[in-house]
Length: 294
Ligand code: NAP
Image 1 (cartoon, rainbow, N blue to C red):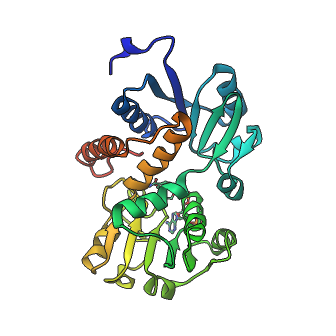
Image 2: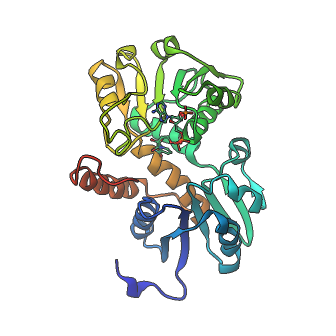
């Protein structure tokens, strides 16, 4: 990167989180700015929980064009914002802030990113699909809401902790707490748990699959939101059973693409963003069994 090209006119966006060193947001957004020849940069800010409010007020004070928000700040930032998108308000979680002339608008781009990825990877629309989402955390909730909003006929929520499944299932009229039989009968099965993620099974013990792969079969589409490793053994097993499958890279890129457009007003160069993250993760995959946390 040519740092001498950064001038007083350069616009900047940032990602705030803790830890944030391994965030892929700077890589993806800088690839996008470069692809379009924009005089913009993205940097990462390690923000302690007690400084979250100061950091958000700093967006306005410093004229930062936009901010990606990651853990542990996705909920805490809500109180500092002037406006929330319907998804961010419903999910009570913000992953993107737009500085609209000093007015700070909070978005949650994960759900739209997931739906765009489904279309790009598998040529699928949620319209009329019977879906099973395994998991009930932040990613699962975004996916459940997006699937419902885009016309899924039903969304079964299956999760280790039933109380969390109940909260997630309350997000839409189409979603309910489901069981293994809903996985078998689903057109689309999504792993939104962290099971299978690099570094989560260091001991080699315990469950590594979000569900028994024997429940999966041909005629189904299976998406694993995990992208590190690029392919989990669960996704491999689903494809071996005849399902069509996709990993989480495309969602990662498309949620960033929605943020890019919200900040710049321009269509995102998705191909360049995909290439940058794909090349990076391929290098990480070759670096060791657990790779690098992302
Ligand atoms: P989260 O809020 O911490 O939720 C974690 C989920 O995993 C919960 O449902 C939790 O169940 C479940 N879980 C964790 N350990 C488990 C175990 N040992 N057995 C059974 N269930 C277990 O995390 P998140 O932010 O939603 O992220 C979830 C996954 O999605 C991660 O792998 C993350 O990398 C991925 N993700 C991908 C993208 C993308 O763009 N591709 C975006 C966001 C997240 P309990 O409720 O029982 O604890």
